[in-house]
Image (cartoon, rainbow, N blue to C red; front, side):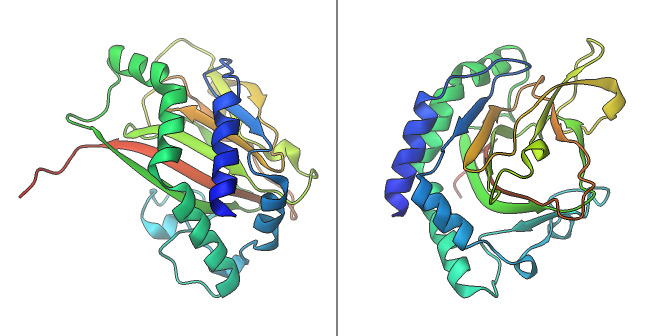
Length: 243
């Protein structure tokens, strides 16, 4: 089941057209086979198996406590659901899945390097990571680009239905022409909202981390509004010399 689903996902990534406004990105519908997506919904993790992203030390203490995460190394309480997600993480976190994203965004990542926005010295070691996130009421994410080491971000949207399509990731352009530093969260009023990618069931948003890849989340202010996402990241890290 998992290998067939991954094959379907890879083909959808290969065939999707790249959109370029306001920065290169892919928005891909039916990213999973419909029956597999139904299984993902059936194995939805309970709130008690999530923890705040702030508590992991991955982000600073000013980050919103309304963003929760379920990591592959967490001890679950919902055993059947946990086994499903652990198997999915392992199936998708492999070289074939990495390569299709690198192939699609290779020209943009090379241009980032050519324009002087490269990665750390000797950063030839791609590291991938996949985990679940849950954004709760009052979550907001100001316009930003991702940390310098990140090459590609992919958000797999996991809502059960179409009620909250307005909760997708928003794409921005700065109101001035000044360059934007990687990994800095900026004031919303300094940016124009260009588009909000619909938070659509069984869809994904993927993009390379470029100086202009400004994205965020408008405030979630409804008691029922929850954003379930599976996040897939690619980072380029320096290789550790052999002892």
